[in-house]
Amino acid sequence: MAHAACSFILNGGPGSLTLHDSACLHEVVLLSSVVALLKIARMGHPVLLARAEPVADPTTAVMRRLVSDMIETMDDAKGVGLAAPQIYQSLRLLVWRYPKENPAVVLFNPEIASYGNEEPFFEACLSIPGLKGEVHRPTRVSFTGLDASGAPVSGVTDDKFVARILQHENDHLNGVLYPTIMRDLSRFAYIDEYEEYLKLSPPADSSHVDGQSQPSAEPRT
Ligand SMILES: [Zn+2]
Image (cartoon, rainbow, N blue to C red; front, side, top):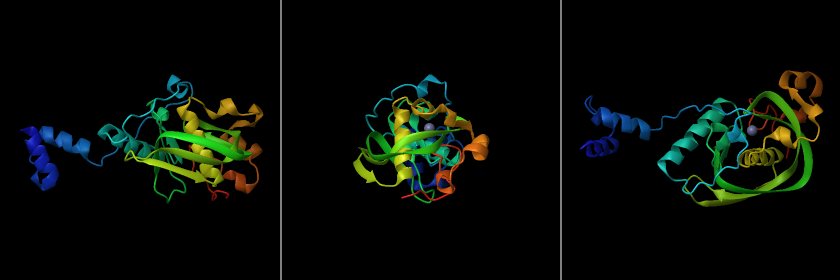
């Protein structure tokens, strides 16, 4: 009657747990808010080059856990976005959080349309640690998809940095890494060399995307 006991524990609170309920304890832990840091795939792994598959049901326990772990992993790495292929899951799922005080946003099966003028910006990527490169992207996007409850969501952003995050993460779902869309590989550099030789005017220093540092400046609007 392990399940009945587990239901009782979950409904009745942890005070109901006893030592001989080891199977239930395992289940309670799995169902709890405990999250895990996930290993991040690095450039060269084929999962980062594949087109990810749509998610049929964002509401399953597996997906809820995956979303929680992705957000935890993104925050721990001081990133502002993370796509599921970056944690070895070839699924059309991305999360982002910017500014860092905002709630994390979850988007399943996104469709993203980019428009507006293209602007250059140095991006970093958690899957390409230690490097940055200048990427030209449109400054506005509209998006549709499903949120964590499976409900349809849509939006438009005029925030250049959020637009860049969404495009960068959506590229991950299509197997695209930013160096492959750079126009000038002389603008691809180790971060410390970038800081010394390539760094542009101060506003352009908010130039990380899912990379290792949160932008130090507020996004330009
Ligand atoms: Zn990335």
